[in-house]
Length: 321
Image (cartoon, rainbow, N blue to C red; front, top):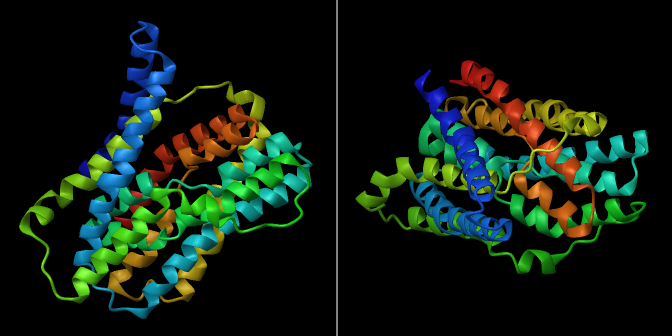
């Protein structure tokens, strides 16, 4: 129970703290919203470019990848994004959504919160091993978002989908897309050449992951907008279906078929279960803002799927702990 409360406090508590700070700063006119956004961006960069790489490097420095079955995890990670996107496109065509709403549904269905919620849950339940496996699962996540996700949402949100073009330029200019992969490579090389992690890195490992989650959660809360959810019931239901039905139905059986339940006491399979039930990422709000889609729709989908995790986390904890 203590671990469950810790997960909820760090993840949702940090978002609540950030949102409360936003209301105080704006309500008492202590800061302009543009300055709050700027500070929030700084917190995100600190979490993604400082805390996250250190946590990943430390985890892979200590991880022993002795099972070939683990090599399928990055593939399943990309597949989870593809299933979310594919489900959204099917719903968009079936219900004939207008483009400016279709783009928001697609981004909210494809972009997934793995780095905050999944990483924290796996870390609390399974320690550095669980955190490492989440990072292995999402090793190509950022690359896929910037190289495929952004161009795809732009095409869907501006008219009929014709073709998908790989956009290496979007990936190349985003340090947050290469930082996790770089940390994995460095950590794995240090492990391979036989160097031992310094004691200080081992000591702070239990602090870095919760601190990273709290930093990112607070940064999200600082810019959170609570909109009228009733306007988008149908579209939010599409996103929830993609997140909590389609992705788990595809990923969990495949993970079992690839033997992830038979190695490391089944922890890789359990991590896949956790990752397959994660909500929309806050990054899902960027394409609508960037390309002029329905931002309130994307915000509503993010908020509903994130709140749904409050009910999902205890169930995952009971089944997997």
